[in-house]
Image (cartoon, rainbow, N blue to C red; front, top):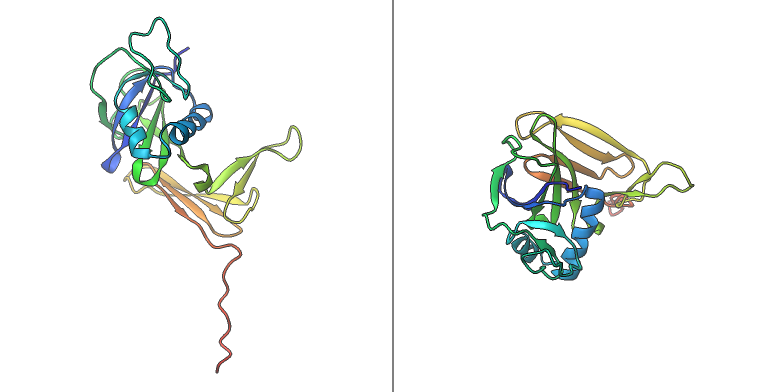
Length: 218
């Protein structure tokens, strides 16, 4: 069953340019694939990946596409199967109502090498779902498997290694409506502030903390 999705590039103040992806996936499946394509196909060149994604509408994305007898266009090596349509990319704004049968939108932030994911809500508007660095080593908080079978997954701070020591604080949104979330590690103070228009702001605190050296010269 198809999962209609938009995939493209974020622009200034919530605007975007995107292509239609007929068989999209939820972030748990598509983010690892996009990270593999970014690394293996484009050598971590985010601009080149964005240009290739915006060159076509897509049936499916895959790092190892194979020719299919029913396709009218050949597969794009290392990227996927383009759709038959020749229409222009879609240009829009996150403030606009969701038009058409869409479930997800994935937007590349080129200067930050980051993907921000939005989901279409029952209210026909885009709601920020999650954000991911193309290089997972840049993520501040990551999810790790439980230490025992059947246990809950753990949230780990990659700055200090704290496990499940985080708090979420709602603050007024810079977009002018609703609230943003600041996720903070209670051990080291590192944080991620999310904003639906301007993206994530990551603050990594040094660990172990730097303490000033006493001045013994006096």
